[in-house]
Amino acid sequence: MSSAARPVTILVAALGGEGGGVLTNWIVEAAGARGLPVQSTSIPGVAQRTGATTYYLEIWPEPWSALGGRRPVLSLVPGLGDIDVVASSELLEAARVIAGGFAAKDRTTVIASTHRIYAISERMSMGDGRADIGHLLKGIEEQARSHILFDMETAAQGANSVINAVMLGAIAGSGRLPIPVAAFEAAIRAEGKAVEANLRGFAAGLAALAQAGAAPHASHKRARPPRPSLAALERAAQETMPAAALDIIVEGLRRLAAYQDLRYARLYLDRLGAVRDADAAGGAGGKLLRETARHLAVRMSFEDVIRVAQAKTDPARLQRIRDELKLRPDEPLAVVDFFKPGIEELCSILPPRLARPLLAAAQRRGWLGTVYWGLEVKSDTVSGFLRLKLLASLRRWRPRSHRYAEEQRQIEAWLALVAAAAPLSTALALEIADCARLIKGYGDTHARGLANYRKIEECVIRPALAGRYAAPLAVDAVAAARTAALADPDGERLEKTLDEIEKRAGRAVAAA
Image (cartoon, rainbow, N blue to C red; front, top):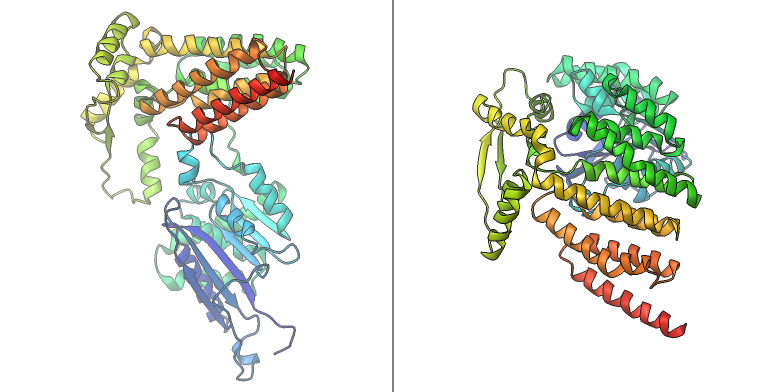
């Protein structure tokens, strides 16, 4: 063996249930069929979505016949900066490998899917806890020699296959392994399981390389087709709103038209008019309008029992579940949805004049947050689906409901605070707009977030607008209070932060 010879190293980062072990076996089989020394190992992981598992392979690029009886020494452990190919079935897992220091700028090719399966930590966050896709992509671009990135999940669905077969096609087409494409196809056939489906996925991975090379990062954003019924509203937005915020506003219009109706989407556009004017007067360059538009779209599409029923009766839901479970058309599927509505959820769809006295009576008796009804609905059955469909049909009733009235009142008050802050400080207005992250969900989650927001409004925002704090202190105070509330939904950290803000304000007044 030449002293310069070294094995080709491959690190596969996959999620449980996605066939990372099968993918590894295919590579080992293809290498073995070519007479190449090969070795693999795996490290199963836990508590990360469906379980993140790492597979490590080393392939000696010379066949046994050329080694003259000598045996290469192959490692079972990946070395930092010593990986030739990083293959990942999900974007965050690829970023984890990069963050771990395994990639090298002068040698590593990253092959990864751009779709996301959110981690538990992302889902549990009170605010938007999702990892920044742009940041993940930038890390891959900066820390690797080359990269092949495309949406493997979509490619697999289009081929009626599975993601590990698509990833094998991308690995084969990358040319980084000393194995021809035909050897990988032969490995799939040799395994003898779902051969035709796996070959379709393999071919889809090969075919996607040309597209990924032309636009490697575009596929993680799935553009929504424009709705013809929204054409007039979208044109109105293009004519009246600055380009810096237009994409967010158009998405907000589409979201709210689907959530309620076109009239509700029009209300969204009208509400943004005042924010647009405040943004222009403060010279924010569209940044305040963009952030407020994003939060307003989410707040106006608040989650209530009607919204939950809409999601549960989505015509594509059952097929999506079947696809996620990899079920054959002839395999049975039973879907049971568990609900636990409380008095607040039941009163939320009543008219305000009925809901208010019922909620007041429940509060006097200590029933709020303590009394619930457990329900099990088999939504794959006709009776279960119709029950949910009946509830979803109350969408037209929503504007007459107690929850709708409360949400609109709170939204108007929040927008008024943003508009009032804009002439004083764009940074302060942005922080107030971002406080909308606290208010989300329904039931206990919504109640805790709303309570924390009200504390911040009373103790920080309104005093800041009244001139109690200087602008820089006000901006820091709102940001600190919001961060504390997001980190600790129960409010203990927020209380400590508010006390510290009060002390800082006292010191500032004394110094003045």
